[in-house]
Image 1: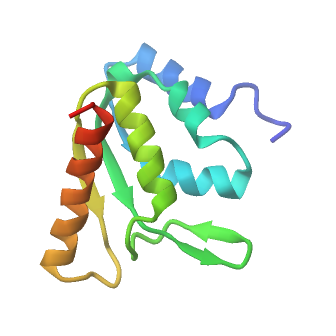
Image 2: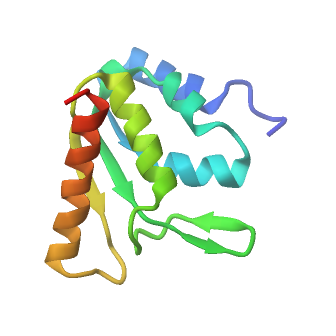
Length: 128
């Protein structure tokens, strides 16, 4: 907004730089925000201090009207998987991944298939 004196990504990086904190990065949240607020999610990831990222979250969302809502109640969609792949290529290593699925929770097998997909995408992004 016009009241901001610093961008969100600059604020995050400044906070990480000035504290001994690390980042749990929510890939789905970045994707949802990029659609709702009309910014490039890949560029956002390109700007993050990756040395401070310890874990990422992957989740699904729902479209409601003109907006996406970060519901953690659906399969991880292709756009989030693509952003995750971009992130892994930037990191150049695998990181801890948590699949968030808080609503309309599926079977254990479905959750495990999402976790396996994350492993396959990471391996492919790393050239393996």
